[in-house]
Length: 115
Image (cartoon, rainbow, N blue to C red; front, side, top):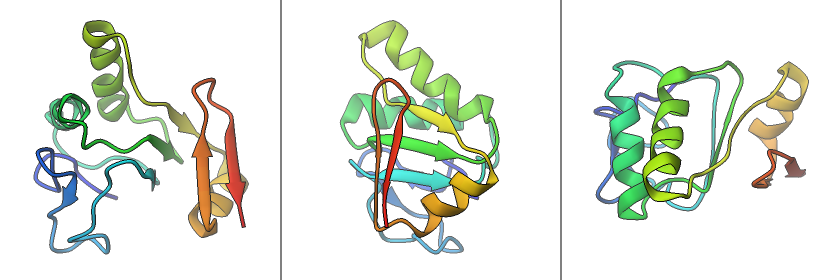
């Protein structure tokens, strides 16, 4: 799990949580695959801030519904007319997403995984 609040620098898109395996890596333009979000409701604001800054991921794949992450994407869409896709996959597809070499989440929510 990754908490956006305190775990990601929205100005750079870099994971800053020293306990997370992605620490030091940029999530900008990537498909972020997480079982679910973690932590504070201010994570919505961090995602919104990253979307405005252009440092957000291109899409987010989750295993469980996460209202905090989803809210950031929805608020950005309401105020800026654009957002990123946030999708929830069942166990089988989520496991495939974790091991995929490349993933694509289309605007209509279709997920394409490349082994």
